[in-house]
Structure formats: C-alpha cells, structure tokens
Length: 488
Image (cartoon, rainbow, N blue to C red):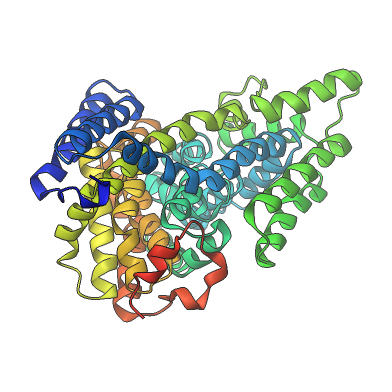
C-alpha cells in the first residue's frame, strides 16, 4: 500500500518519539553534560521504527523524508562552512581585533551599563558568538562592574543583552543561519526582518540601562588592570589600521544591496585574506610561514598565543573545522524532524497545538511559547529553533504568511530566552562564565525579555507581518505543494 494511504498517526503515537527525545536530551545534556547528537539519533531511530511498524511506512518513504529536509538545509550548511572560514580570516587579519579594540575604547564610567551593552553588541556582531563575547569581554566587564560596586546581576544583564543582540543580527551566527534555513527564507532577508524586533528591544534595554546609570551613581575606576591589559595586548599583537574596517563595511554594503548570503560572505573571506597580506604580514615568518598561518586560520581557526587569557580565549576560534559539530547537530535534528514530518506525526502534534491559533498573532504566540517550552524541556536552543520551526512551517505558509515571519518568531523566542533558563545549555554556560545565577541576571536582561513580547505584539497588530507575495524572491526550499495549499 502506498505511504499516503497508510493510517494517520494518533496524538499518543506522535508523542512517543518527542517524549523519548526530551527525556534523553535532559539526561544526556543536563545529567551527563553531553551534547544532543546521540539523543537525536536515538530518537530518530525510534521515530523511524514507529513509522515503519505502527504506521506501515516503507523504508523508501522514511528515507525520503529524512533526506528531503537535509537537502533544503544545504544552502545554510554551506553558509556555515564559509562563516567558519570568515571568522578565522577576520581574526588573523586584524578585523575582529580592531572592532574589539574600538568597542572597549568607548567605555564610559558614567554610563557603564549602557556602554557594556553596546560594547558586547558590537563584539558579538563582529564575532557572531554570544558565548565568546560573554566569556571574554563580558567577563572583563564583570570585573569592571565589581570595581564600580555595581550589582553583578545588573552587569551580567547588560552583557547578555548586548551579546544576544549582536548574535541575532550577525551573519556569522549559527542560529541566525539556522532559523531561516528551517523556516524557508534567505539569510539576509531574515536578518532585515529581525530588525523590527531586535532594534526596538535593544533601544528599550539601552534606555533602561541609561536611567539606571543616572539614578544610581557609580564609584571606582573603569580602567582596571584587566581592561588595560586587553587594550595593550590587542594593539601590540595586531596592526590595528582603520582600513581593516573595509571588510565588515563591504559585507554590510552587500547586505544592503540584497546580495545573496553565500557570495557576500565569500567576498568577506577574500577581502579578509587580502587585508592579512597587507597589514599583518610578519617579516619574521617569511612567505611560507605567513601563508601557513593564513591557511591554518581558515581551516582549523586562529590560535592566539599572547599569553593573556582574556585575549587568547576571545581570539582562538573560527575555521572550517569549528563548524562541523554544529553542522552535524543540525543534520541529525533535521533528520529526526524529517521522519516525524513524513510520517505525519509532526503534523498531528502541530494540529493539536495549532487548535489554539485563530489568527496570525496567536500563531506567533504559539510559536513563541512552544520555543520557550522546548528551551525548558529539551535544554537546547538549536532544538528550540528546529522542532517548532518544522512543526509550524506549513501553518505559516497555509495562512499566506512569508516564512521570514516564522524565522523571526523563532529567533525572538528560542534563542534569546535560552540564557534565561538555568538548566538550559546557554543558561548554564552564562551563569558559569559570568559567575552569576540565571535568576539573578534575568530581571536585567532587558533585551532578552523585550524581544519575544515585541514579536508577539507585531503578530497581533499585523505590523511588518509580510505575506508571501510581498517578497517571493527570498523563499528557499518552499515546494509547489506548500504554495498550492495556502489560503489566498
């Protein structure tokens, strides 16, 4: 019997693989401190077995389902690979170091929390990593805040607010690449659409941090030894010529011109390599040594050996290899989602939840709370993006809503709320790195609290909620069947 004539899964059957996934993820990530790869593979096997035995699907149908979604994510995977190259070459060329240097220089003792948020936003935007920003510059700001007698929860809230704002708008961020790939839209179209949630949320955060700085006078010195050490080490290690900013300026220009992500980022890699040859050429290494440094930075990433831990931890990253773990996680998660989707189990789960969604606004709200629930139950921001993204993709398309609305809702909930949950991987990481409990900095992570609220407001008001017809050129991987099923 053809797969499309097989019995439809019940809600109970559809819940089994999800419950097993959540339980195994909790055990492996929270108890064993491992990664989500193996639980996803195991849960994918369970889903495939149930699809074949309980629902009577053929192996050909199961295999087609798990590979089809991976194929749609290949453009995002290629972008992630280029991002690894870009990070490595932008560090070795001095592009990232000069952005960090200028970011630290704008620190103002009268507006420390405001400046901390801005600095972390700039550095996270440059690196594409909220984790690296928090573990390096964020950690340095914690020391400065302590010297100014500012409660650590406030400083940590400013660090996390800035770090996650930059992470969301950076084309170097893995989750910023993942969300549009899952939803079905282009990277830069997704980033531009996110401006409507991220910029207002950041403005709210900056206003509150400014008010706190005004009503709560600071005492002490900003120029701590750690702060001065970072500045001097960066200036001594790299030739920090302002012309290095040509690289990010070019990428931003290409984004503004709506150039596709992959060629834009490749241009960033090429310009970064040229800047290395012009500004960071080490006469002591010779031609072979310099070329080896460039190639190794592209492949395995840049390795900082300054001897200053804050600088070395910040700059030792990038390279093609650094993206392989994330790519593997994305592939196994999409394979699990593909089996669930092809078997009809994902649609059955979505149907149960979407019975609550009567409008575009309630659909965004359901997406938001589903992502938050996944962050709480599965303890992983990647799954909080992928699982709801696959569940609600067809619902957005059926209503004629552009997939960029879904990808924005995913980012405004799944990613930004992850550090607010103590047992989530992001929350545990931030708490450990910054030395502050998640519940202590949660009230001051104003950006992370405001973004999902703004996203739901836009959904209910209809402001910036674009239809498919408004931007059909930015659709990626949307099939003719999905288009035909939409409401006109």
